[in-house]
Image 1 (tube, rainbow, N blue to C red):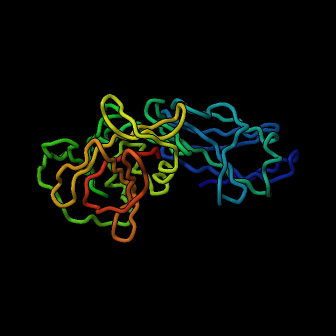
Image 2 (image 1 turned 30 degrees about the vertical axis):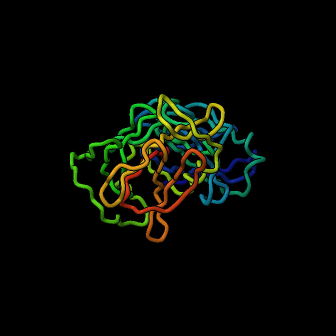
Length: 285
């Protein structure tokens, strides 16, 4: 962490430049050039770049809007520069010590995600660990809570590591660990709050290419979750395929894990046995 203090006579406030490095961003520097601040940084691979500012020394951040240069979506790798027009922001900034940070996030194609209630949802279920199913209506594979072994969504039962022996023991943990997350890089299992936000969105039962499921959202921002059923916690038997959907969150409640449940008439969050095999629909990190 590096801080550089500069006085700006024009706006009569102290700006503190703070570089907060993401995995793709290095060598963040800043300097005053006239009435503006130039921010330079190095990027090791293509990413989406955002500048955020804090008015309470890093307690909370908001996005800076009056910037130009190498900022926004799909910024290529290399040495980059952003120009921040501080004068245009001065009425929005409070206090005399401002902290900013450069944030890099994975670039995603429009076909990979849908934004619903502020959350970027993947358009397909998880298949084998670290991969998505080929199509939105494909069931992918089932996962036991906080385990990184996928199980076939059709019979015969077979796991992603070629086992046919179901593990019926309860799964330990207070949250789904990063090491056991089956989502591809740049994605993760959704939180309880994120799943609840999807439950709160408008939805309806529908059929896509012969597959029953529920579509969430409105207009162009809609997400289809297939009613893939589940594998029973005691023996892995396949149940409720085509009639019900079960999607894990990363949370637990007392001794049970939380999941999103739906059928043709309703959707809500509920607790379930952690050794049950449910679907996983990832959110962007």
